[in-house]
Image (cartoon, rainbow, N blue to C red):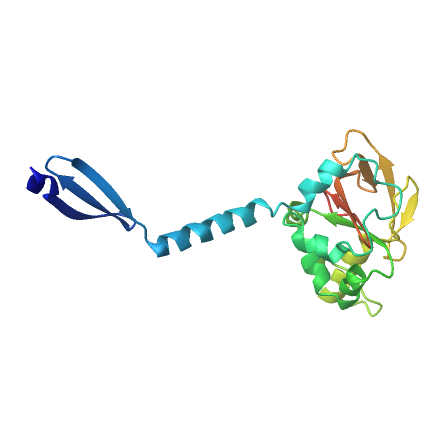
Length: 226
């Protein structure tokens, strides 16, 4: 009897995915399974969990902005502390309106302004979808220089950026001058707009508003007709 209880059969099992375990069969004691954990498997699972956590926390700013747009933050100065994220920080994190920021990064003067906390700026940022819908992209926008020749791509880009930037961090139902000479915009409160405002000219809908430490981002669903 004692000999029979000790008589067991060991077998190594390997299944797809590197799952390894031993089955131990005893004539009288029945079947038992012992798992052999693979350290490499643990590392892969840990890396997968970290990747999943990072993906969950990387929401775009437009989603966040739309949720806050009607929260009463519009009209005053920036609500963030001096050490909070800058306009550049917020634009870098936004996936749904990255094209405007791509253009801005090609301009040292614009980038410097969006990084600096010395002055506040309001920027009207068209979504990527709005820019992609243009028949002629901002850097291709036709225009004539004083010599009558077509302006350069750099000049066109600078004009596009300037037309979407306003000095200061306040929004009001007044005519506001952009950084493009001779081009003004007007903000009108509108409950039918997702972000609670519309911009003229162009009857453009505000999708959401994001506060930063050096200004405000106003996401819009069309490119301004500058």
